[in-house]
Image (cartoon, rainbow, N blue to C red; front, top):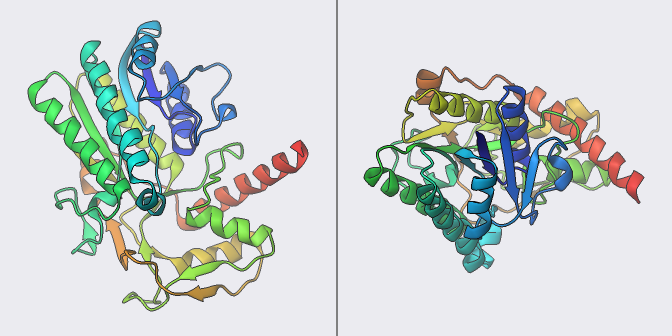
Length: 328
């Protein structure tokens, strides 16, 4: 019996794979490698190169590996990109979710964990948001995650045997092992680290927000903590227990962009003065998640602090650069 992890060759998915394997759970990864990396998947883990929109491939994988549960991470991300390519995002994220759920129903699979997003909240009315806040997505990406949650909710209503939950990630950063760096050209940590190692100046978009230091405040959480949350839920579902319909996954603590940059200076030893640019449209001043529910139900609490997250990201980034230079 195996857990199917879609998107398991991606940054977050590869950490989830390792958490499951370390706990003795059998897994199979399905990933089309559009944003993932084949070498992120351990050699002793079964791997299928296919899109989650390909129902035949999904069902064949489920059959071949006796899949009894699904962790669904495969999706296109990045809100800004989705504004320029909405149809692509809806196809991959919404159609992919539909196809996957059809396969789950066809094969009688009774446990599913959906990777969702704090983009559900958009620009929140509250400084700290809980899971009962109504959806206010502000991009096709956020809308696709909202629709995916609705699809899972509606299916669960008519199939009560399906034990399921959605995890709304906040800002996932860091690395559990140097081999698994975040390469994204859109995320804050790799953008700053790339600038520093290229001898460029990191950019801050907006320093006039109504926050203590004028920069945006976000809830940053270590990717290893996020992977451990997936594992805790999988083990709960395997034990025949149910979960709440949705959980925030964060630290419940806000850190500003300037605080991140201060940590980057300390950890890297590189002094710099950021370039201040105008705000980006749609960026909320502050978004931090309330995390009492996941702590209460699963006894899960994020453990890594800001400097630990930055240090692990820096180590993985250096490993990535060394690997890239060695291959050239």
